[in-house]
Image (cartoon, rainbow, N blue to C red):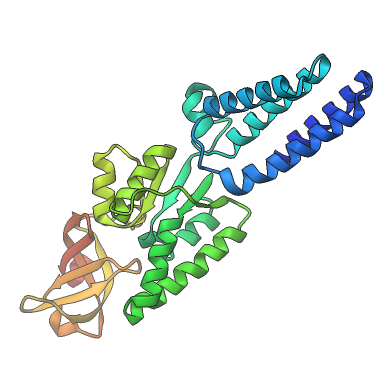
Length: 313
């Protein structure tokens, strides 16, 4: 974007030399530079649509021409400047030009998919590892209203939630400093009567973005709205080692199960293993024969029995 602006200003100066109207060109560049600054500071994400911005600048340019009585080549200076500001304002808006020209500007070569982070995934903390390993790329957005939600949790929540909220704010700072992704705080907001989940879903629709979360309710509602969701818990479950009924594995039994004579152990990835006949081996590591596997949205649970010497071999 910076090089595009410099190239345009250079073209105006060169054209002014050939047209022998250097003073007018310098004045135009100054006006455009000031307008540029105002757009980037106050109008980002508040105007919606490339065609609207183009129409506004065209009308303004034509009024300036009529009022000031500009004639000849200077008219072209003003019209070119108006077109330039229209393009710059559209580039500052994440949704404007894509809504006007979806086939042209939504192509993979021009834009990488946006991912919206909610409070649950930021307070979880694992999102930073995913970004560092390159599993998440493109533009990562955190809405301003999500930041406010985390801030409220930090100020009013219980001690454990306050710690997670503080960790989330520190994680955001680290994401801002990472060079592997483009991180932005999104200022687009929606009516206050909508809850945070509804606003996240509305924002995802507006920006044609994906939602990154580990919140089960938000996942379900967004899926019903046909919004693509990246659920970290689902990813973690998919990456757990595959265990098949009939296999044997070494399990450290650490506590008693709910039923009589049951023992509970865990795999390295945190998967719970319920072992029939394992209560008497609490504190020991035993060979366990897998009998069945239960998979549900909350995770995976493995059931087994203490293996005999023959089964262990």
